[in-house]
Length: 177
Image (cartoon, rainbow, N blue to C red):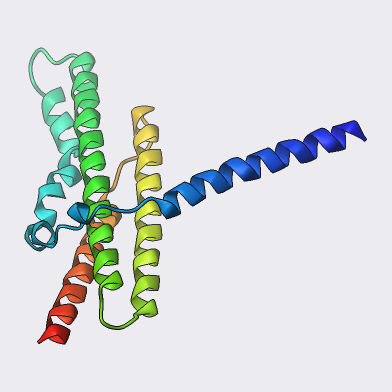
């Protein structure tokens, strides 16, 4: 009987902690500075295109064909490229969050409610988070020498968020005129 009581208390504590984090996230306000529409208009996906080439096998094949090659050189290059790749991922996540925040702000300040667009933005966030999780997992496997990392889905998710924001801002501008 006491083990049931202890289990129930632990479950209640976990639910309370989870509720606290969800509530804190919901209550926290995004700064309108994060929703800088001018930055969003100038934002370009092109800055993330080099990510797609960081782990190209041709580079390692070329390196292996050079005189004096040692496998240690290839491992060091891979380690350095993973470091650069992770930096790109952090920037990509930050930029996606900025675009998403701007889109939310446009929706909040819109003249009419658009639950369909809010749903679309939520789905895009979910797709992005899933794609980020997959890339992180594949990067871990690649560290172990298993598989390859493909960021095209992640970059296209960022591009979709940017395009959605542009459509929202164009619609808002037309509504103001």
